[in-house]
Image (tube, rainbow, N blue to C red; front, top):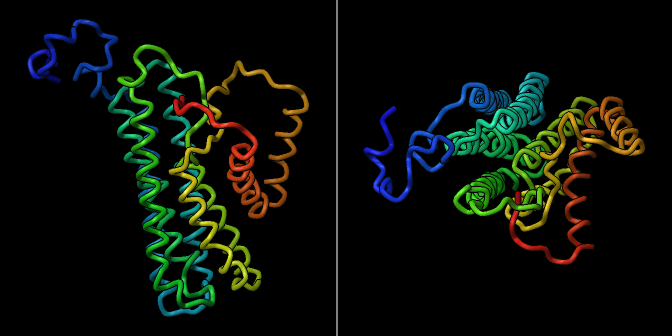
Length: 294
């Protein structure tokens, strides 16, 4: 890698001898193995999830029902998105724990998130959630638009996150508020994935899907709008091995995990929707707060 002092036009005013300065070309573009390996895993899961959605769509083209083969592919795509969420959580924690954060890592993470939590859920929306198999062929004509709105809001959310967390804007002091501004993109994608699991489970039990089809477009638009809103959502980044919690909170967490394991698709969808509406209800009860985040 070339020395930043020979190519940076501002090198005269920004010392390059400081190895901790994140604004030198060398440090900003540094690739740390473990955190970026997790980001690569995130991108891989998102890419394969997109492939699974496309394969499932081809199987459904000549059918008015969600076939068993197509359902299996959509379920695989869902678990790949959840896998991407796990990789996304690990890369940030590894970077923060080892002090290996870099501007390259932040940009790489956002590009991977765009595929795993932007494109893959948008394909799920168009191919399954808003597909003509729901009983309303009009969704086939407008479904692509819903998918694009979601994708657009995810891109705006990621770009805004990169801007407001950029070190250049936080050089003097660290923001004290640890909440996300707007619904996090992984949480939005997880909600879409939980909806897919719920619909596939209904289809497998020959349950009526038309009622749910009428409810889904407003919900999907709400998820998209919340991503670009200024409603705050808890990030959970402050939780680590040293975090203490009251006994009641610990018991509630175990009960929640048990409910997800017991009720599976319904429990997972309930948890994701609970997170979304928690932010909404909290915003309704609180006074406006300053715009800084993280």
